[in-house]
Length: 461
Ligand SMILES: C[S@@+](CC[C@H](N)C(=O)[O-])C[C@H]1O[C@@H](n2cnc3c(N)ncnc32)[C@H](O)[C@@H]1O
Image (tube, rainbow, N blue to C red; front, side, top):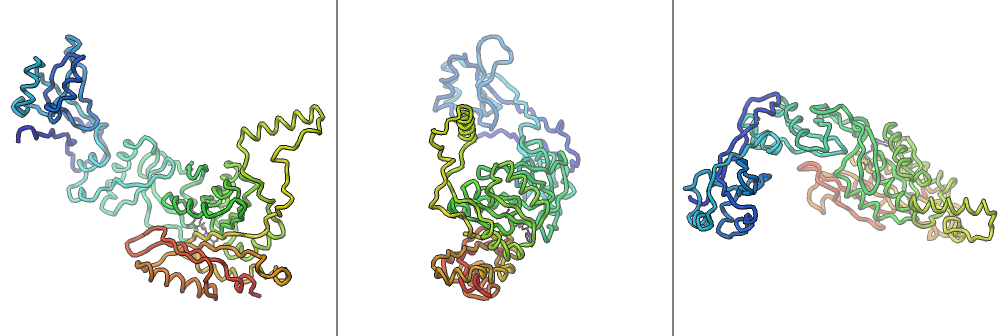
């Protein structure tokens, strides 16, 4: 129908291409253009009559210089190649203003099309239904999860992803097997540099890690944030399966004292580096041991070697510099009459932080299996408990991640509660909540169950 003409801007089809040939993607599209004095281009662009005839291809400018360069005229590109396809009112509009119609050629090349469009033009037709262009990004790395039928084209797919995403310099395909103990993905390089050391920013923290050696999942960002928001700055957090620190570091930035543990030596190594890089060394203690041992002794260790009291928000670099200058000036003038700055002031009423407030357990496959390790973790305090009454001791919250195959909320909660109570050897009743973190597969959901550790478990002998 006249006036409804659409230009075919799809890329040339090259089915069976195995090696990417960028030069094969060239297309010339003949169109018509109205030759308009520069000062009057707005009249055409704003006209209701012309609106449906103007060039509307994405990333193509509607107004271009006249390549014949004869005057200061501009070419207003139209979305038709034949005058007969231009609606009558539009023809009339141009005629009345003496704007002539001239032919123009649009030249499109490889850079014009999206990754999806290029791949649809090269992959066998039977693979064009589902698109393989989905990927997750961690720092400069794009990680794909290609189905078997796309594997013969993996290099080409990787190259196109690389070309079309300027921030990506490495493209990997996840292999089926995941490291069963430390949960990191096995992967193969399909395009770009073999550089797996990632620098990633999340929650105002900088994380560096080797993506081939440690666990990282950017999809957990919301869950990291959610738990960290539950922590008060004065709290102590024990992260049993800390990875490279996505709970530990933001918690420390809030002011929490953090005991961060991971059995993978590479995770512990990068965790320690991230602690240093984010300037929270005085607030995070890193360890590398089995979660069960960690749970068993960390409460006692903290009691014997507490964190200092929380003294307010961490000063900025500028404030620290200012403070150093002030101290220097004080030493030089030997002036002891200056009042101490807020950093110097100890709050005598605040005791050191001796008790863990939260345990974080993000190892969803098996964290529940570690819950029996909580039996008796505070038994060393039994005498004090008797002296002060149990009301004096605030028992810690446990945040335990887990999977369930139950998809209905009630059944999922019942299933998780049953498994938790079985392992703990006790009912959970105080401050219990279930949070659906995400669906990891069509029949598998990840939850975080939070509850206060029952006193009978904590003080069990
Ligand atoms: C699912 S990852 C979670 C990491 C991090 N908390 C996060 O949210 O990204 C689980 C972590 O537990 C560590 N891990 C596995 N088994 C462990 C064990 N028995 N004791 C301590 N850490 C363990 C793995 O190395 C891995 O870093």
